[in-house]
Image (cartoon, rainbow, N blue to C red; front, top):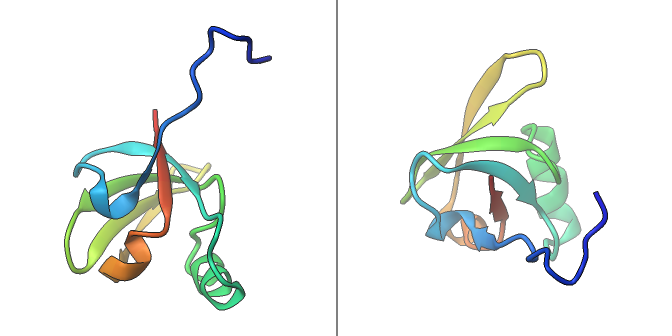
Length: 88
């Protein structure tokens, strides 16, 4: 889809400031290399589909796989404040 002047930019919100139950795709920009490697090792990579299960400490996200499987991962609040979510 090609964006035009009337297409709004997607809203990106830190996971820590999103609402429980929100579903969307992750944006992992601006993280240092070690944080990016750690998230990728847990299955959280840029453009991953997730559902926010719990806000707080830890922030719990459910990573939704393409095959229908999923897993839940807990993130510290400081990290969850830097990982962004584009809500669908």
